[in-house]
Amino acid sequence: MKKILLPITLLMLTGCANPELTKKVTAEFTSKKDVKNLSVCIAEKSDMRTFNGMRIETTEKPARDGGVSLALINGGGYIDILDKGMQRQVIYRGEAAETPWGKLTNRKNDVISDINSCL
Image 1 (cartoon, rainbow, N blue to C red):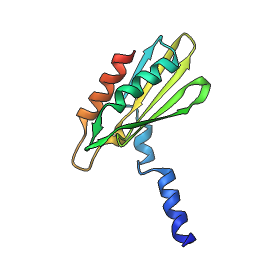
Image 2: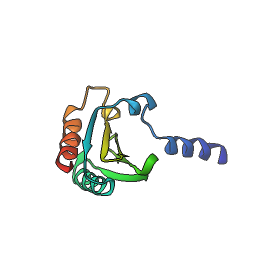
Image 3: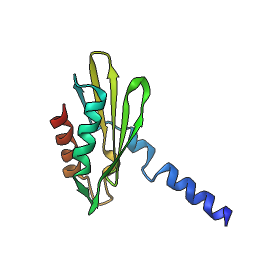
């Protein structure tokens, strides 16, 4: 039983997105708002949406240099908010939100719209 449980646990912890897709930058933004305000605003807007019939759930983790990383669970996207002194850099990686049937431009456009409204 332990032999079966370990691989399943590792698969769940590593996620299902191709690591190369999570590195590709979909869009970048800058803002003068602080990291906390940006992360709360983006997470609230994202959590009001659904993707593939499932509600988006946003998780937040600390990132380097006082920044924050947001993972859009069920949405296949990642948003890094980095503190760059006088400005904050917002990096959206949404390439993992694609299906074998084509690009999900509507989903990406929704996230970009949410980010823009919070800047």
